[in-house]
Structure formats: C-alpha cells, structure tokens
Image (cartoon, rainbow over all chains, first blue to last red):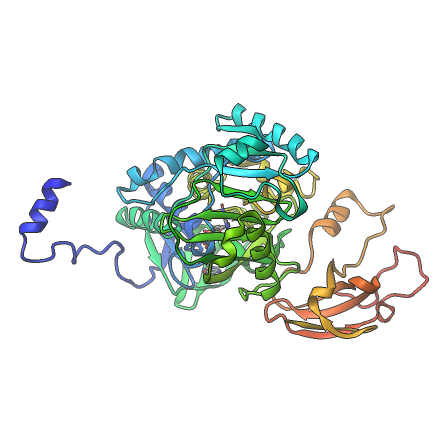
Length: 415
Length: 100
Ligand SMILES: Cc1cc2nc3c(=O)[nH]c(=O)nc-3n(C[C@H](O)[C@H](O)[C@H](O)COP(=O)(O)OP(=O)(O)OC[C@H]3O[C@@H](n4cnc5c(N)ncnc54)[C@H](O)[C@@H]3O)c2cc1C
C-alpha cells in the first residue's frame, strides 16, 4: 500500500479512474444457470459465494431498482448473535464470525466496528430471559454476560438508570455486538461477485415467473425473458408478493419499520443501547450521529412512508434514556418495508417449486445475517437442493407442523 | 395525523385505534385437519391490494371492519361487522362473501 501510494503521488494522471468497481450495464443473456431475484446484500452475497466456493458463475442478479437500495440501505446496521433459540444463536454466531473478517476478505473497508451491545432489563421476567440468552450465546461461542444495574451505569455513564418510571434492573452485555457500513457490505459482495463473472442487472424487475411441471424454467423481466436452471428469491419486504408469481403463498406480513438519525455530536456513546420495554434503541455512528430505531408500525403496509406518531414515540423513549438528547436536532428519517414472520425467524431453503429457493422472512433483523445467508444459500443452490444443516430449522414447512423458532423476545425492538 | 372513520364514533385520529388482524374465514376447529388449521393461523391475504381487516376503537372497545389498500394506505370503507357476520350465530360461522 505505501508503495502504490507513492506511485500515485508521483503520477500525473489519476490512476484509478478507469478501474470501475462494477462493470457497466450489458444486455441480458438468454440463459443463466442461476437467477437471483433481488440485488440486496443477501442476493449479491449468495452470488459471491456461489462464484467463489462453488465455481458457478453463469449467474444473473436481477434488481428492479439499484444495488443495495432496499432494506440493505435502510437498516440501522446492528450485528449481534445473542438470540434466544439454539437454532438462531448457532446461525447468527457464524454470521458474526464472517463479518469479523469481511473487510480483509474484500480488501475493502466495511467499517466493521465491534463496540458491544447493551440490552436493558426493567422487569424480573426480562432478567430471567437474559440469563438464558447469556448461556445459550456462550455455548455457541458468543461473548455475552449478565451485568447488574451498577455495572450498566459504569459502562454507559450518560444513561438515565430510571427511564420513564422503569428502573433498570440489569443488562445483557454482548461484547460481540457491532455495526458496519451497510452499503459497503453490498458493494463488497457485488464487486467480488462481478469480478468472478457474475452479472448484476440493475433496473431489471422480475414481472413473471415461468413454472412448468412444478419446476421454474425462467423469468420475465421489463428487459425481456431469460431461462434459467434455478431461482433464488431474496427480495425482503416484497417476499410474499414475489412468491405469488411463483404460485405459492408465504406466512409473511409486510410492516413498515422506521428509523432516524440526529445531527452529529462528539463521541459520547460507545456501545449500542437497547430497551425492548421502551421500544427503542440508540447508538452513535462513527460520524457522530445518533441512530434511533425501535419497533414496527402498528399495522401492515407495503409502504415506506413515515408517521409522526411513531417518530414521536421513539424520540420520547430515546430522550428518557439519554435526557440531554432533548437538545439535539434530527437530520434524517426514513422507513423500509419488512417481511415479518410470526416467530421472528427467517424462511430459508426449499419452496413448493422444486428448483426455486427461498431467502425470505428477514423482517427487521436480516442485515446481520447477510454473510451467512450468502454462504448457506450458495451451498443449497450448488448442491441442487440439499438443505445445509444450519438452516434446516428455518424451513417453510415449519409453520404447518407448528415447529416455530421463536425469537420474539430476542428481537422485538432490538434487531 | 391519519384519520380513520369509526362507524360508531365518526372520524378520529388513527392513534385511537388498534389493528386486530385480517378478516379470515375460520375452518370448523373440530373438523379441520392440522394443516388446514395451521394455514388459517399463519397465512392470510398478504399480496398488494385491498384487504379486509378488524380494527377496534380503543377507548370505546368497539370492533368494526375496515377495507384498506395495503400499499397506498387508502381506507376504502369502514362498517359494522353485522354486515359480514350473522350476529348471534356460533363463533365458527364464516363471514359471508369473504374471499380468503
Ligand atoms: C429501518 C430498518 C432498520 C433495520 N435494522 C436492522 C438492524 O439493525 N440489524 C439487522 O440485522 N437488520 C435490520 N433490518 C433488517 C434488514 O435491513 C433486512 O432484513 C436486510 O437488509 C434484508 O436484506 P436483503 O438483501 O434480503 O433485502 P433488500 O436489501 O431489501 O434487497 C431486496 C431487493 O430486492 C429488490 N426487488 C424486490 N422485488 C423485485 C423484483 N420483482 N424484481 C427484481 N428485484 C426486486 C428490491 O428492489 C431490493 O433491492 C432493518 C430494516 C429496516 C427497514
């Protein structure tokens, strides 16, 4: 690096201009071995690992808008593995491990920042649930401990220990809790995938899925028709509407999720702080802005509008936790459409259509899973439908069998 | 502020209401197979379009029906459940004319 920097300093021309990160647009080919619907983090990660580990490169990622412009661009970038069920914790722990080395793997800085996540307990019931989560997390190699009220105060001196008449009894301190730059994750995977021959087609919307005798044979897009060997669906908020094109329903309901950031201030908050009783979580970005997020909208909608009621509620809780924030100004606010399942776990693996694979039901918690989704979905596709161990609990048919993977208590407002 | 028109109380701030889920025909619990029942519990009409839903005006505990477009959030119609259900019939009764 220092040598190339020196060369750059001595060079008259700007030497990097010609080397675009992503290849320019091309025509669609008539056939691909794999078509991936959705150019979010999950879609491009799947393409990346298919090319990297399985030598499959005749792949088209079809994105109706632009790369990583869906929920990948809208999330609050919380990465953690301290869930409740062993199936969930095992899966998310693997994702955290992949994230830890992702900047090196890409040779591209995703600004992975492991500053810990602190979840607050305001009731005895929550303290009991925390004990369970700490032990499950430790068992699968994560770093989580239960800390008392005084330790919470020591860790985050600016935190009000008695917010909204709900005294803080204890905290779940997850040392592996982290954030990353979400756009960079999508770009890193897209760059790595296209360098290996994958085609990324932006402004390309899948409008029909062709099925013959229970198998998908191709898709229709606004830019023409392509045939394919198989399809991976990774469209987050629109999951239920896209699966309808393939002819089957999903047990998913679309809810808006809203978030916002304040103006930047000097660093005062190291960890991510979350309270599901207050339906609010807060962290400070490396630029100094305070990110504020919380629970979903009160009723379903395929829309990204914001509401004053929800924003006011979030701000009220954030100010209860950090009273001095009442002086701060909001800078941006937004929403995304989230594909919610009733057990707060994803739907991954096989579908009723033989060669049509699902990566859906990611709701409000799927950014942290981007790398491991890519790895496991690639394995599933490359093996022609052999479901990897790590994702068997998340199968679509678990609903018919009442085999839910209940992460409700571990997600609610904390993602 | 979004306004929802309650058939009993008139136009009110939507914050006064509680969403109660979709109106779905319930299979007969003693006759339905496990799969039919699971389908009733977990699946619904979740495509983009007009949906029929239960809502409650929270302060008056009054339940009613809303027809709403789930992408534009436009409320098409609100009405008393008596229009759909045979009041006084057994709870397993299916709403008349409901498309699942
Ligand atoms: C406000 C908010 C905060 C969140 N916070 C967190 C968090 O802190 N931590 C966490 O882990 N998760 C969080 N999430 C959830 C997370 O963002 C998502 O689960 C994750 O980004 C999903 O990634 P994806 O690649 O599957 O979907 P997306 O990034 O949404 O990509 C799907 C893509 O599919 C495209 N598409 C849809 N239909 C079609 C079609 N017919 N043809 C072609 N393309 C199509 C869309 O345009 C989109 O780009 C949050 C979500 C929101 C909205």
